[in-house]
Length: 322
Image (tube, rainbow, N blue to C red):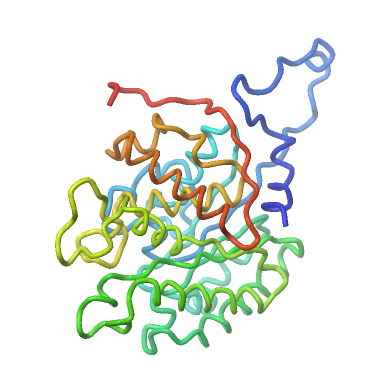
């Protein structure tokens, strides 16, 4: 399936390559269209894993997105929108997030807020699937089915995508962790399996985004350190922040890259070493391009793979050369 049904015709409505759209003809200037094309409406539903807890991503570019809870959050949705802008695309991006909550909370407490016509909705639940029963997908499956039905009533063609989140170091390495002794790969597989099952609850779910698998790929490639409890190896990133649970700036950046590539069908590598958000958030050129490559490789390895097209960015960082 093409991303977001050919990205909701964005690839026709908006320029993808350098130079932007052709200059308007004299006829077009004399007879302007009656209304500009509507921007695709994108909603992110989730928790602190989306709003960027534990890093500067939390408040980054909050003015560019619509926080439905009016908490002033930017997070991963703002990163996604900034990537899209650099590619010449324009989305109307909103988020509805609540710390520590799963999709059951949003369905039960926020139905009036999220129950609107959206073109694309990207969702993730609690990082343990169920806070009381870690690893049990039952609550996720019921919540996903309920949210799909709610959103479909408001827009029958809504495109829903689930984020398979990352393994938590604090659940794998300490003795009291729910996945202690099983390894990061096992927790990653368990989470992905649950999200695949959730996607099967409604035909409105079109894809599962392999964020957790992208994290694992970064560790296996030596770009990120797999165990923050024994220190971070020289030259490697930590994708977790200080609590070994939430993401670091690099971890959220990688998540946003995966979402960007999946939704737009554009190659994250094309964002390049001078990508604006990386500069703003303190990631080096090498770190930015390494994470972009991981996102591209994971999307290419997905089943089905996400077809990715190169593009030329329309914006470059304002500031000293790194």
